[in-house]
Length: 298
Ligand code: HMG
Ligand code: MG
Image (cartoon, rainbow, N blue to C red; front, side):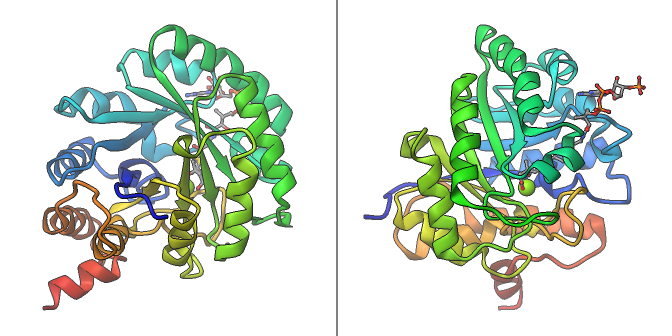
């Protein structure tokens, strides 16, 4: 039984742009957020409060959060890896914060400079402070099927991380295929492992498209009833600590898939394509969305 409505979280301004070498001005990021909300996105991952030495592109987090024209009914989320990040983020009143851990020890070290256990110790006070302030908390779980350093990741390790996230009060989690190596049955196993600790409505799929499997993996997740997905307009992105990994599945492509299956998203595909053209033009490259490319060539 497929869900009748799916919620898409566009992570383009954050995951999409974090790895861009050329500085993207805050004004361009603000305009991208504006276009995404105008296209009907109801959740947007705007920025990260991480070390500017590690991820220079997100150093303008405050300017971007202050510059966006917030629309009622839209949830604006931001990444916060530690208390320092939370203390900076709370000044900009996000609707939701995202702590981000990994199912792989090696990736945890490379990405956030600590072990999985240490990361949970760092997240715990962040989660507590956020919930006390009435801010929602999501947990991203990286490398749930494969890791650039450790190879294949067993579902047990995903269940372990999901249990730790649940234990510190994280309200919902993303099952991320950081490097896009997953295939449908492996992705289903990772989701099922997560479902040992989280309800279906609190689990989302976050699939990078490096190996061209992300839409198949999305369908596989839909078959389990997953109704929340992260995707990136124009297929932007990649993680700086996952060499060679490409962007998230393009939001345009997911919308086309869902609408074609009669699943409602509330998103206007043409307006979304325009948003993707806007940011791709700025970056001086073609959109990675197959659907946008097809529609633009009609
Ligand atoms: P660290 O070096 O272990 O931290 O970094 P530290 O506490 O030892 O502090 C070192 C320095 O960083 C200090 O500055 C701190 O003030 C500063 P200094 O005294 O040297 O000038 N610092 C900070 N500055 C700003 N904001 C902060 C902050 N914390 C410390 N929050 C840290 C630990 C996590 C900060 C670092 O490793 C980091 O920033 N990593 C970046 C990770 C990142 O953004 N990765 C990409 C996002 S995750 C992702 O893309 C995956 C996802 O999409 C899902 C998927 O696809 O898998 C979510
Ligand atoms: Mg990602």
